[in-house]
Image (cartoon, rainbow over the protein chains, first blue to last red):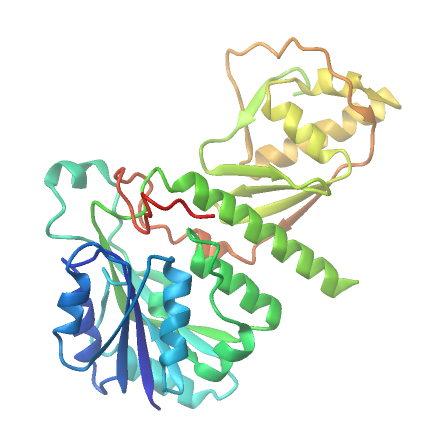
Length: 226
Length: 138
């Protein structure tokens, strides 16, 4: 099973290297790792491009959805894996998930569990102001998902306008199209909590996106019933 | 219950009137709701601080059955954590006219629950990603 790892990156110079290594160090290693630098103004692209085995694409800042679509268009693997530029995969992520997909040909994708961690560079003062959990939980995020490429082509690409809810928008459209997945018990992803996670300024836009996605899903379900 | 004043039960309650229906979401439970009939008007007036009795009086129709329907809806909104009593607040004074009462409908959806509940933090810094400070998204 050839795995293409897709990473969208925007101003993550401090974290992108570690993220990439957590993917390249998997056993079995991915067939390819594609980073799309989404118009970073820092040294993210330089950091990513300096690591052997990375295919680096650059685009003007268009958002995560557009960056991942560009990466997927370039991908040659028969399964797609996603990793946010500031997160880390756990060892054994690809081994467990490729085995699970191979065992159940009817599945489009598998997910896994995830756990948050406080980034070492997070100032103590900020850390104290956050409620960061520690327990692993089912990770309904793209960073835990291993998805057959054929399913991605059938279910549709990422919405490029839901800038603040790209994965929920994709998941909703995938559900409408008939998405077959399984949540595995393995811990596969560590989500970094740092000072630049989506902030208060973005929350109103994110909530507007959520409500629009919900409305579209309701309409689609209603249409399917009638 | 009909004389109490309510408010949305915290910042995790979001809603939008789409014209043909109101969508209300509880980000703390990951559930979302489609409100139909007179439920969108009821939600709007209740969350704006009007009492159930005030709203009932603003509808044309059988007062007793309207009050019963509104009481049941308030109970459901409370049970689902969407509304909470606004202690110490007086009912809003503005006169209301809500037209003809239609049986309220509430449909609940859990399709996105797993995704809405995985937000790892509930209080974050001002800066964020993805951010496009110089090129607002269109």
